[in-house]
Image (cartoon, rainbow, N blue to C red):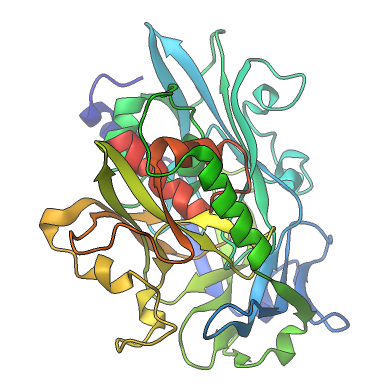
Length: 429
């Protein structure tokens, strides 16, 4: 528990200096414990656990560029992302940890109380036990505030989801060295800083229930929002088929990594890792390394005195149920030619050209550092231009912050990018 931000900064600096971390890119064929399976044409761990890197052919039938091939991570097991909350002197505090992930831009970031895959917490890797796990597995110690299976990045994960949980406790909790209690206000302050609060923390915090607002006016009723979402799922299609990594169109293994012929999108690379404070202190693994920084943005406007966000129906290669509710814009601008075209994301230029007077939130956050290497997105909330029509175009809808927060509670409805931006918006505003 910190009385001021300088106290937190001193603690965090101490944690950064407490252990040695080393992440070294290596060719995929030199990864210890990993192998290219010649029969199935994928990359897997020798135990058959953790995850595989596979080739996928995708067809959506939705606009230009609706068919493509790509590598994707297949990690069918669900992990736990859990945050403990406790009232200290009447004020809710959240237990977070300073955790190293191999893909983090700045090595150490604030993670949930528990951030562990099923293989991790069942100790397939023969590492040390995961602290505080007993509060999140039945029969758990504490009261469940939020519990939902949530999707992760559909562009890079095949149907991946994790269990997001918030559990409130009354008992005294011993605070281990790399853990700390933070208030909502302190977390909001830290979310203003680039690459400090990690993706897993942000997605869990998006599930914190809002106080009931039964009389809040909205552009659409909750029934209309759900009908829009259902219609989008019913009207879209998503066809996928596995292919060998060495037979994917436009992709090739060169210099020990898998890259796209255009130089865009992302690569699959290998890394060797040393981390003195992890359950396992040395390991190797493949990772996805994006080319350039992405952009995640909400357009916002006030309707009847209430903030609304423009969401869209999103379909990605790894989406579990065809469609999820995503932000107004989610892409890497560098993957698209600057000239207007049918494939250029709608509202991208509206967000990129917004003057400072219309920007309500603008921060750089890292994505999941356990599987993605130095993946960053610029998260922005932009006030819509007055010239923007009131009626949302096909595939988009104006919803309130409360309505989007309610959708998060159900799991596998709102994309991880939208949840991350929503958490920043709710905790900072």
